[in-house]
Length: 219
Image 1 (cartoon, rainbow, N blue to C red):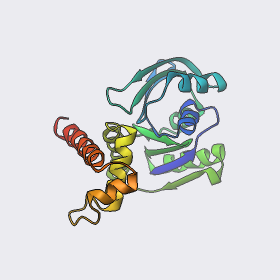
Image 2: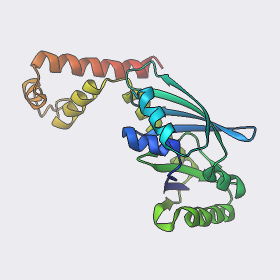
Image 3: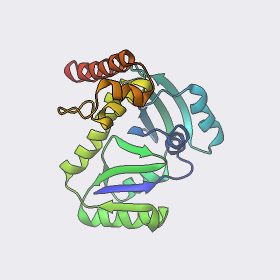
Image 4: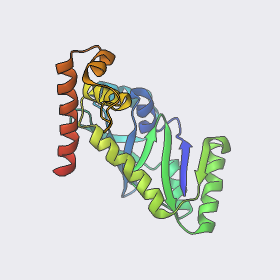
């Protein structure tokens, strides 16, 4: 079952995703009576931005570590936190969540698995906790659900290889048809759309494509 729900106001990663306008891919592991959460955001985020969210939120974070990715546009955050309502519901109704799961703009997107009767009870209580209007869901096969989650993760990991400018230029090159096999825009048109010189447009597109291909072939 695929579910999307508004995150609680006290969720650190929900607030952070809204604050920096980025998705967050979360890997969560039980650790004694606590949870160890590893979050990956496909965006370079300053420590100040992260700790501003920590200071202004009444969350259950006990410890936090921040590490920049080796790529230009990624940030890893490791958080040790107390148990939360979201995971208590999963444990209470004995259903499993796929990892990573995703948060964007404060909204959780995840897959849960379990026996049909347990999923129904879990969903009923989830809607009771978050409000029926804040929970959307659909039945799906396990492979469909996991594939969707993994596609989002791979996309974010690949695009984090690019600088913000490279992403902007590559997006415009795709949208304009410059990258199409039947090219609908030439280099001059692309450069004019971006208000940059033709050599700059060409070099930026080639560098962006090279980074993506290298990431795929050398993974």
